[in-house]
View (spheres, rainbow, N blue to C red):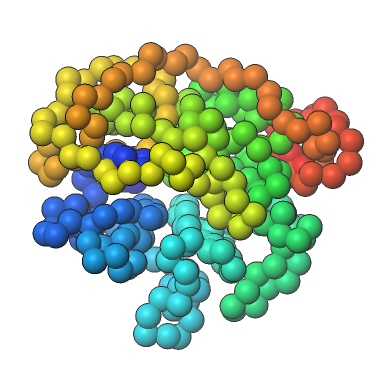
Length: 332
């Protein structure tokens, strides 16, 4: 989700969006249509990055107003993007902060101090072309999300990670408790935070279940998307957990919108859609999920994970014997 009620929800079978930058919206209305959206990041001041598979199978990207270090990482003085667009993942935070990575390299700038410390503690070696991580790559960050006021979530290939949720809303407190009681993040596909929406989040489990708190204007689209959340699996590569291959299918366009169902806490992650001014993509007969209360899921950490307190955060590394976390924040 971005500023001015912008959002984009994406599953292997469904898309939904609203108020995206014009150049991004044009991708969904052009002929012939694109086949897939690989990554989409929204920031303030019109900032965006989108990578997609076009109708002819070419993988391409568009972007605007990116932080200078991110632009340098993408191009490295070349006329075209040199990073692997198939595995490239970008998260954009406030104050020109970002974390970007593909299967062989990573780049970041202006991150919260605790997150940068957690990343550097896992880094083995880095140059312009390749980034290597400790534990034969198992300590590589595979998912990073940046929120407001220094909030963040990071998980690693091995299921370790680090987090800091600054917002004290009921849903965030419940989510923080869930993370705090977890042994590792192997069961978490990602925790999506949004700099322009302090209290909003989507906690997506690898099972395909999700817990969320989103703005009311997103509910109609989100409720349609929820049944389509796939199960995910973490590969050995430093990329986010990906949908299981057997659930992949092209997005389907529905002929008309479905009446809004107002759920306080929705289930399953994605991004928003347009208010019917541009076509959205939905299942033909979308079932609606039951409403969820504030997330209080059970713990699902591995028995050999260790939590190391670090300035109110827990930095994950999967080594040693389990310990009880003393404050919310990091997992090893």
